[in-house]
Length: 87
Image 1: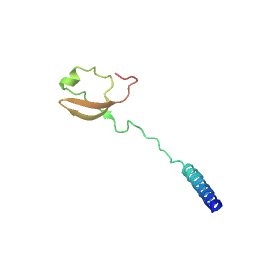
Image 2: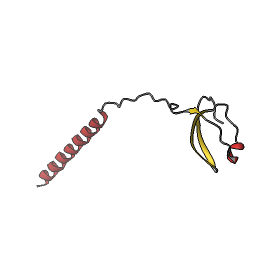
Image 3: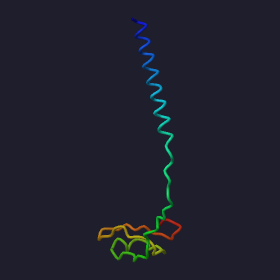
C-alpha cells in the first residue's frame, strides 16, 4: 500500500512538472506583435500660449508647435514639440 502511494505521488509530481514546463514553453513561443512607428507629434499644430494668470508666471517656450491638452483658469497642460530641452 505504501509503495502505491509513493508511486501515485511520483506520477502526480511528474505530470505537474510536465504541465508546468509545457505551459512555460507555450507562453514564450508566441509570435512577437508587430509594432508600427507612430509619430507622437502627429496631432500637434501651432498653438497660442494661454493668457491665464498661471501662464503669465511661467516662462514662454520658444516653440509654438504642440497640443493644448486641457486649459482652464486654474491651470493648463500643453505638450510642446520642436524643442530640445525641458523647462
